[in-house]
Image (cartoon, rainbow, N blue to C red):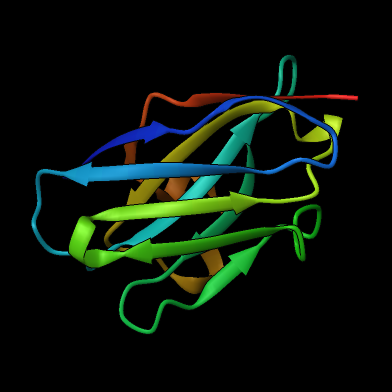
Length: 126
């Protein structure tokens, strides 16, 4: 399995930007789907975005499409989430996750990801 560590969270005003990073260690290959999920207080964890290995196909939740961009640098074993035009409703703990074997049908399902980071807090104030 791969170990994941997130960074880059913080406090930002509405309309601002943050870039989250997820550094992977352990396995040296990058043949995994990397995803970002978030969980707000009292709410269930929800899918935010993911990126496949190889061609780097991206998927986004409708709530962040056009504002967030996921990318990966395999040479640095790091996945990024660039978040622009942040809204108070984006406030949550953001988690990075990885899955080596996942179907397209399950790619937005947190249960399909086997490795998780510890999370990083993002707080957006109006």
